[in-house]
Image 1: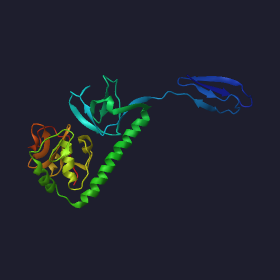
Image 2: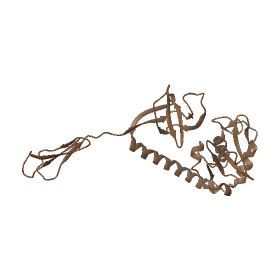
Image 3: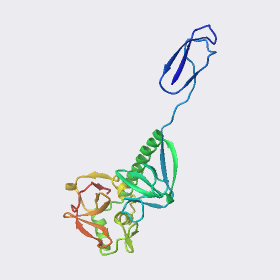
Image 4: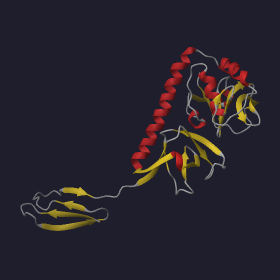
Length: 257
């Protein structure tokens, strides 16, 4: 309960009345003889959330509590995410974008932080990430690399292996590692994960897609070749290869050139 003492002018320390307001306790200086209420301090509860900070270089976010569960995506060192529930056998539930998953407590630290402050931190981190990526693409695209050059280069690696977490075009790469490494050959730096790639460059419709555009799906990415096909690091069985661009629902098409 908040207790506000109302004091009459010129009557020192005299409390004429008290107004009770639901909430935290309010302490008032009884020696103040002014008609105004003088609030000295307020004790209030703080709404907190538990936040996980990644300590590994790259951390897998899985569909369940253990390494036997499917890897949904990867997050990077020093990134911070809200823990959305209780830990289970040393695994913590978090949300990354629209993806709910679990991470091993071995590779995170946790702490309690103010909920509103963390919400602002998340908004700013997202703005910074997108802003830096947009600036990088804008500057590096001045090299006038064409989309067809990107596709011609990427197709040299068809038949090479798929390796989860890999970025090598020869020894093996996963879908985002493949796209990232192809563009790196042209001096263009792209984010490491498909989730971050959804915000890079600018969006075009699938009907407007051109060679070199990024075709993003739920947890996957490929490079549009034209004629309705993409070149991509598909899976361990098929490696790097070509498939139809509409094999699965498309989340977004991003142009970075």
